[in-house]
Length: 245
Ligand code: ADP
Ligand code: MG
Image (cartoon, rainbow, N blue to C red; front, side, top):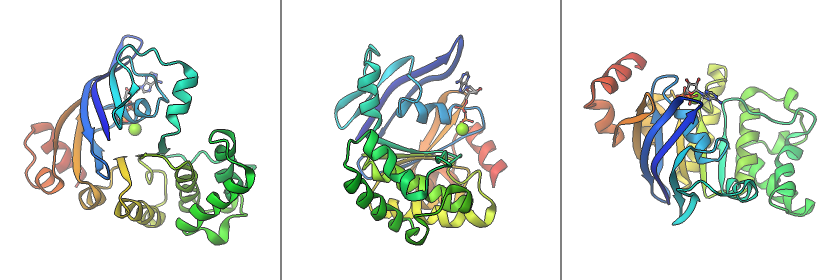
């Protein structure tokens, strides 16, 4: 489904991604872990074109998404971006719109759906994340966990091929983490293709089909969750795992 080849990203002379290669199969859940500053967010942002990679390629379902010459126009990039949903640590909801309006907005603007169709889709996905009763609330009237679930519904309403989660629970109070993980787990069980960055190691082990460990702009090790956590091979992976557990 996704094929990433020799992806590089520099900011000025600072090379953050130093040649990333990996594949994601349809329905697969890839969990990326690694120390702060290792390039995890930059990698996800490149996959979603929030950052333009410096070089390398990404194919989604066999079509170039990032092409080797890096010549896609901004307009084309914007249309590609809609195929990939992303959920951030900070929910970034529009404060002056209700939950429902937040989920409708991008569908109308970017997917060019009618208001009516967008509303139906929004209701469906807000219902799915357990917020049927909260659709008319403003973000300030919702808990962090509820706001993050609105953000997930907003991404799902675009009906993306893949969902990226960048530390989706890191900004939440501990008691609110569970409700968001539950929604992500349900999506995983339904077969959504996902790439997740998380610090929740237990969740990573349960949901991940494969774990990728990044350090300093490289993929250092990857493996099946059980094997990866029980029997890490690389010294840096070992050190990281013993630190977070
Ligand atoms: P992680 O998510 O693994 O903590 P990031 O991808 O956020 O790591 O950051 C990796 C490095 O890239 C950091 O040193 C960060 O300062 C740098 N970086 C990220 N975004 C930018 C940017 N827009 N401009 C310059 N440097 C950046
Ligand atoms: Mg990050």
